[in-house]
Length: 167
Length: 225
Image (cartoon, chains in turn red, blue):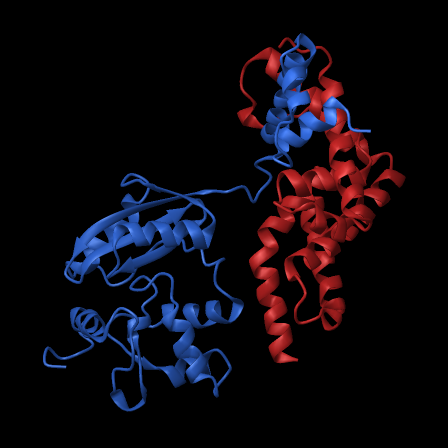
């Protein structure tokens, strides 16, 4: 017990920051991400005994975090009222003064909020969490081609949200 | 069927290299427009989600001369992350960047507070530090050991076994020694005040000469010790 649970504690410690960041990107809400991360660690605790000694433990944690995040997103979609609390037009402070740039950021944020949760997860895993397509596939289920297609589909939708762009 | 869109995305994400066909398309008005649009899409995504809490952060460091040689300190937003001596600047910076996945920038301004406190300490004008510590990169066990060591006041010493007892693991003095050996912020967390049983000085990652010097400075060791 002590050896394995100590190493799970270490594993969690090591990856906690990036997993909270991932869930925040996936859910668009820091507090919700913290809660989901806690829930993911409880699940990880239960499943740790089944993790093989040679397994990629980071990818394994991402799979658990992804499942937890997708569940949280599903629960939220049942609670439509919740959407009113999150202002999709709120921009980060560093967004810059240019009106055009602010419009662009708003459009892209709305498009991200409208993505199917799996596409959003795939996009964030690829773009911000440094996971390869094989690891994304392991996190989301399905194969590498499907993982890649999810990322590409998501980007096409975000690009479409920008509309006409001068070259 | 692979579209120009797919090829362009693959190129921008670094999934594949530019094909001849894509190169030709990028020469057209449509191609140029789409390249600009996808670049802006990715830029907006970065602006919106790049900083969601775990982004690669910046660590600031500085060096100061002391009686035990050049000491390096490094701190980030959350507090002091590293203190090191007997190391070259290049290896200190490289190790920090690698271990903390951070951009490491020299900044006397951002490290002025701890540098000031260290100067006072080595001048014998200060016996403890008032500084926020960022110990997130240690394990929970190491942290318990380090925090127990941090409570040993200047001028006193305790044994490894005593620290083990204080953290509720009386059989763990060897593990305590190992955890102290990986102290990321020596001096500030005074692992030099932890010694072997029977008054023997024990080990020190920075070298026993430095451990003796620090204890002498604090008056915990007679000048001849």
